[in-house]
Image (tube, rainbow, N blue to C red; front, top):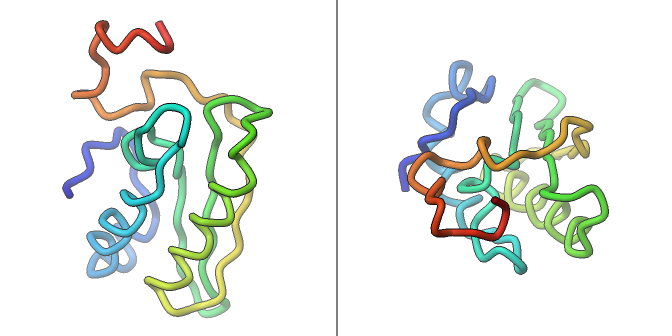
Length: 114
């Protein structure tokens, strides 16, 4: 799956050979209420890799998302599995908005957030 995200993760430039695997792996983690992946929704805001391990910054669609803790942990585990290094995840403070989604999902007929 090719991402059409409007942002760039640091790992895309520092370790481009890992980028496609991350997109594919994280595309399997979905928001149970919306039915879209964390990639489609643009929730994974940063992935960095250094000698200490990996760092992920992620948002949730709402601050009190009941599935948030599980989605954060599933994302952390998937990145750790793909990269094979200890991975830390941080809940980002930036507020999620529908314009963070992939362009082809911004269909007014979707209706859930508009």
